[in-house]
Length: 113
Ligand code: 5GP
Ligand code: ZN
Image (tube, rainbow, N blue to C red; front, side, top):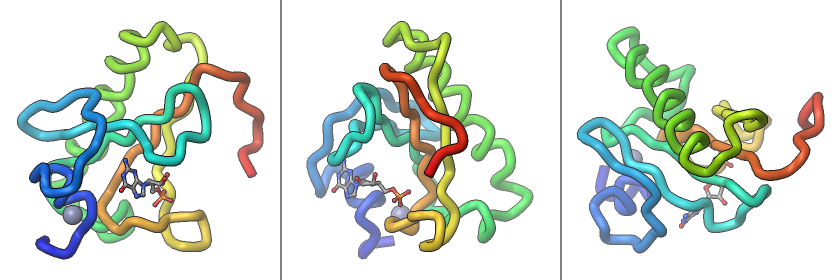
């Protein structure tokens, strides 16, 4: 997807602060952090969002959570962090390439706003 911001970030055509990468995923610092740790974990494959995802994407959707857990452990926030897929504009989704938010490093209220 040439016109997708996150595909451009994966390709290095838009700069980002890389946190982690492997053959399936790429993770980087959110440009507008909502917590001391706010990392976005994205699949290299262009998937629009959870509701557009196919069964074949199920492993990838779950795998992003394992990457988040790895990053949380590295940062010492594994005792209290949150992973979020926003789905659709009504939930605040603004970029239409699947991305898992990893938030932590502060007290996280429940329910989220
Ligand atoms: P959404 O609102 O779609 O769930 O999350 C999109 C996230 O991407 C937002 O938290 C926003 O701050 C972040 N974001 C948008 N544009 C950029 C960018 O160019 N670089 C980085 N690093 N993050 C971005
Ligand atoms: Zn994309």
